[in-house]
Image (cartoon, rainbow, N blue to C red; front, side):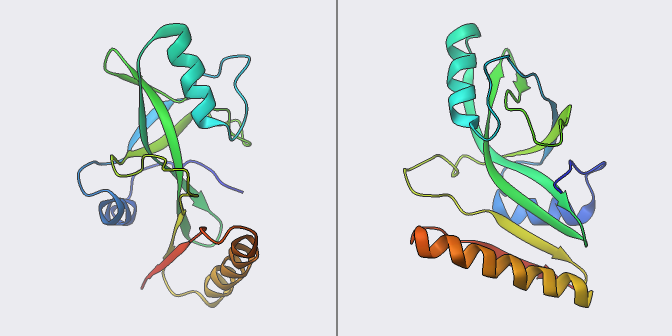
Length: 154
């Protein structure tokens, strides 16, 4: 299950720099409005901006996965008065998330690929990465635009 990393490690910083070299990941509070829906981050941001103002910021949520995996999943948050707010509820009911701003991550209508990073060379982790590739290959059959990048740090 995805969870927010407890701390920003040097490995997380290195991975994030490879995706968005201009910004560093930062922790932000999750403030969910009653009509916010899980996974609907773009709609949630638009509704929040309509209610209270602000602007949408695109980038990536940084998640820790079992077996020394880190994943960056496309996301958007609201910035208002210099404060960043995540308005999208998570499946694990996180109260804060790690977010990496990326000005290149603006939606274009195509599916935006996630980034998976493996820390170390544990055989079980390598097997898990292969399983993840297979799962995303199944999605690729349904959506030819989908791409997943899996990188290993050994």
